[in-house]
Structures are given as C-alpha cells and as structure tokens.
Image (cartoon, rainbow, N blue to C red; front, side, top):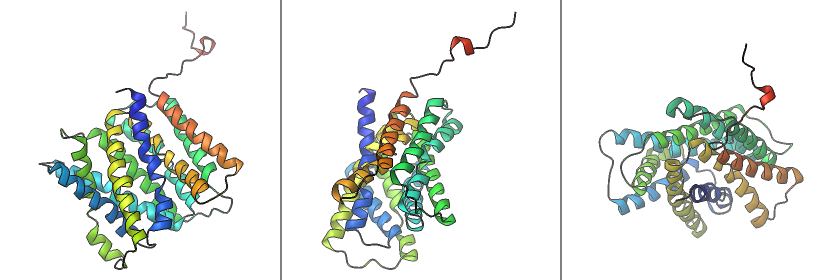
Length: 295
C-alpha cells in the first residue's frame, strides 16, 4: 500500500480525537476524568477481545499493561488534570511537545536517525498550536504544566514502544490487549472519584461515540500507522487533534477565528507536511560552505 495511504489513514485518528473536546463538553458529565477514561477504554477493549478471542501469552502480559498505562491510564488521567488546571490553549501547547520528545526517544530506544527537518517540523508544530489555541489571558499553573509535560512524555514513550514491541498477532488483537489493559481503571476510579450519577441519553451517546469511534476505530488506525511509519512522522500527525478541535468549534459552536489562529492552522499543516518529508529529504551544504580539504 502506498505511503500516502498509510499517512492518510493514520491521520484520521487524531482528526477524530479532535472531536473529543466537543463531545466531552456537550455530552458527558463533568468532574469524572478517571471514570470517563475507564468507560472510554475498557468497553472498547472488551468488545475487541470478544471479536479476536485471544489473550496475551508469556511476557506479553507485562508489555501490554505498560503500553496500556502509557497510552490510556496515565496519559488520559494527566491530560484531564492538565485540562482542569490550565486553560485549554496552554494545555494543548504543552502537549504539542510530544513529537519533539518522540524524536529523541526513538533515537535512544530504536536507534532512529534524528533528521534536522523532523526537529524543525516539531518546533513549528508547537508554534502553530500555540498560535491556534493560546489566548493573551492564558495563565500558568505548576501542577498543570507538570501534568501536561508528563502526559506528553507518556504518550511519546507509548508511541516509541509500540513500534519496538510488535507481537506476531493481528493488529486488532494487539489493540484489544492494550485497550483492555489500559481500561482496567475501575478500582482507581472508585477510590478517587464519587460514584457516577445516573447517565442521560446524551451521556450514553457521548460515551458510545468516544468508545467506538474515538477509541476502538481510531487506535486501530493509530497502531497500524505506528507499525508502518517512523514514530517521528506519526507523532506529528497528532497535532491534527487541536487543529480539528478549533475547526469544529468554529463550525459547530460558532466560535470565531482570529488571524493568528489562521496562521497557526497553516503552521500546523506545514509542520505535518514537513515531518512526512524528513525521512526522504537530506540537507546538503552548498559547495562554498563545505569544508575544503587541506593540501
């Protein structure tokens, strides 16, 4: 299958994730981050397990729980903490450092080459997201900043390890394992948060959407991309999530777009495009700048 098709299919995942903010604010009960994370991951994982009917074996149990925690339990919990403690723009900008973290983790864990263009694309992505979502009134909170950075590192580590650990099972099975392992948050949810109140029809529809489309479908596409594309190129596609969130806010919630946001949107798209070129493009110094051999 052509690389462009792999990129487009993988990009669908963060594009759908961009709708999470809209669905969360409009359809889900507020104040239950761990419970919602559990209800988002566990049913989707169990549904896929019923389809694949295969459990991990041997050392894969430990790896599955590590990946599940990094991808879902730890990441989603820290994401909610950052979202509650920081304005949305600050939280999204902090999270945008993930592609940069992936570049250096992939070098340390996988031995991947660090391309200057990948670093440039990652930095441009942070700048683009900042222009897209930051406001002049944005405030900083140390706990929120720490949660945002740690969450970005968690997702970056899962991106790299998902590339390193590739079991000899179908992709759907591997996704089912991770979602189930990451969704086993029930004891934590019961300990940290009060019991969930009676769900409305809107709550059920919102959870069903996030579980089926926002989790089961998207993570199959995401893990598929990680198995075929360099982690640095995949992680930059994640910047399409805040991009989609802003566009949906403009279309559905009638929010306005400023000139800075339009520039940020274009910068994010340019960042994604540059990151896809990084593996195929090499910087070459002009002849006049090359070192002249000593005679």
